[in-house]
Length: 136
Image 1 (cartoon, rainbow, N blue to C red):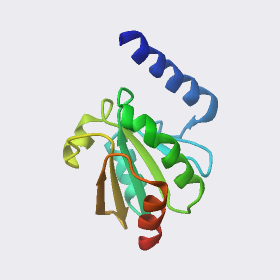
Image 2: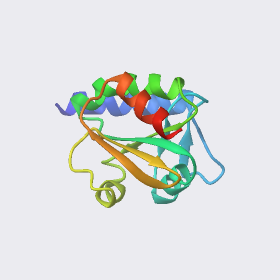
Image 3: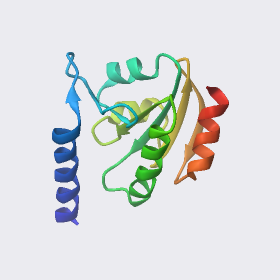
Image 4: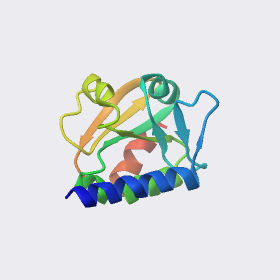
């Protein structure tokens, strides 16, 4: 189990090094357009959800259903103008607590800075797209 977790962490670090960059503030790693934004920290979270429609995926590297949901979230990010963000609950426990995340994956939809929808567990891509579109 420990080796598998370490492999997942290494893959995540490699992806960050290869496909994402630090912002000037250093607190938020942004992927290229059409990919989820990886959030690290309260201020980065507030900046991300402050305007427009934002779908936030609270996940954990060790979570099987989160791994199932990941490609779905990536396709939704690629197919919408809304921001799609990912929050690692292990690295951001305070955010998970603040938003009442008790199991993963949990998806929160924000509209103009306010949480408007909550989904728990693996979701179908069509449902996520429909939900995002209903607030766009």
